[in-house]
Image (tube, rainbow, N blue to C red; front, side, top):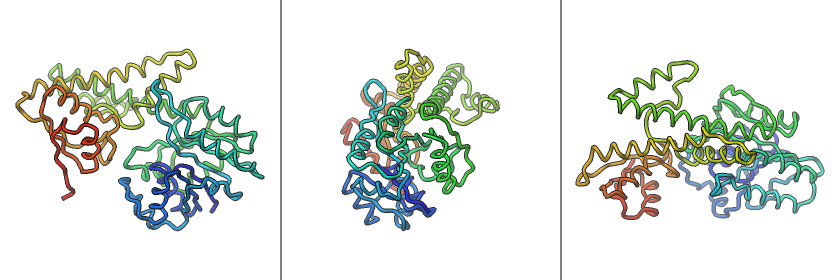
Length: 370
């Protein structure tokens, strides 16, 4: 099997590296966190991601380091970059971590044979084209290959994707990327190959469509409740239409987490950068907020301030330890700030995060696996 480099082996990058290693690729991973790298080398890493600890213990072909030169071995032609691209205040993505990696790469000698950088991080439309222009003159091509995964199920989401999105530098590189996925994907995904910019837009658009569908479902649910009906009956009937489908059409808390909200904001920013407006993205965010208002008012009508309101499971989705933009938690915060006594029940790793931020705003109860 070929050698593959992965720069940035955090939660996403490590899962990708382990899936590659598991089917026999020699994987060379780099990360700047020395303690984290040591825990991977010693196979003592603890992770809330399913299968990661087991896959790591069983791994034989994974080498990791804090030194970037590890992935610049002459035999490594494909280098996947999985570093963070946090959101800026204006909604766009901060590409500085990718830029820093590329700055470091350019400090080394030009490779004798062209190498290929594959960006896995979510980026703004047009970024990979500009990065390719910069890196290509130094012997590197740039392709874009984002993944559609959810925190907590990354390993399985990578193994069973609906599609693999490839914004290819050229057909040859696209063929190589596709061949890698065919080695470890256990589903039969569609391989959507296109230009880098088309892939950048596709990545944002898919997540933005999901936010729209979630917000629509909750809005229709709110409407049905106000008319005295059963929201689940209505949404099940809407989802039965083959043109719509039932996925992401259930009534509940609004969308949150580390991906969907920020991708929705980034899409709106991308439109503004080319003097367009995307009112759907803006309306979706507004609808998500209005649904939370609706839920808060329902709690206020159902509870007096002498009663305690209990919330169980505070992460943005089940089987996760991530509280980023969790709508359930945001609703609990709203109620607690209005003077209600709110009891939060969750696992210790979740409660510890919330307690650190909000201290005595809530009453806490640790749930155990027993």
